[in-house]
Length: 284
Image 1 (tube, rainbow, N blue to C red):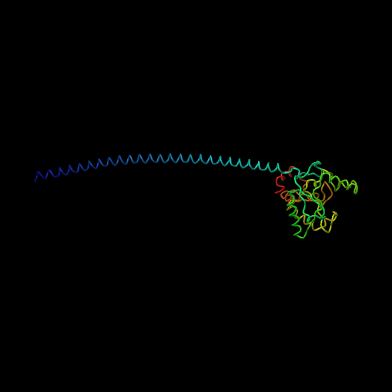
Image 2: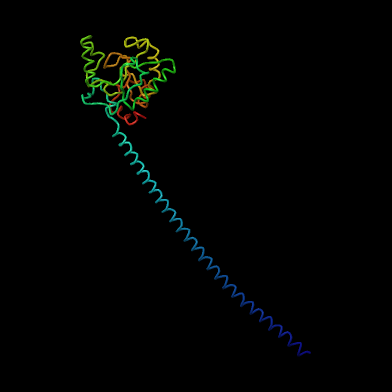
């Protein structure tokens, strides 16, 4: 028993040592695995970081390309707009906003691109055929109808006149009024009527006499409303070209007419370069 009693502890110690050894072995294995996992994790983190950097770089490059594309698109749109503007201007008669009365001259061959008959309902002398610029006619019709609806009807005495028509009219005025005709009648080539965008108005009770038009309700209505339809009074009081002509109105487009009305300016007092800026919008 004594001998056996000594053997038992030794065996127990051996078992314990073996257990410790195995445990140490397992510990080393786990440590190595843990270290390997740590290294793998660090490697993965580096890969993820690298991928993130690359993704950020690609996103920046994509944004740069998108900005370039947007810039190109803006340039293309700008070029297209410019081309559209130039094309529109090329199809618009540049004579329409020139200051003709004693300033610019229309030659005897000038005729508006298109003329249309004014409806008989708008004409004072129903049997008379009056023509105006075709593109202006819709604006004129709206003006005439609005004046009628607001109990201030006006009627048309005169519209388009050719170079020769103006010459004949001026000669007849000279016979009647002598040199005094120069105060109210333009020479051929200087008349706004040759453009097809100028009109002489009257009222049914006034007739063809111009003298009293200033006192009519129709004239007052035109002063307050004609600009809404693109018309202006060519020769207001104290103008430097002709005597005051309350009956004579010219179409210059809604945008320019509205500007002149709001700023209380006269068409003929503006610089021609300023006026030309409105040409592209004359029939808008």
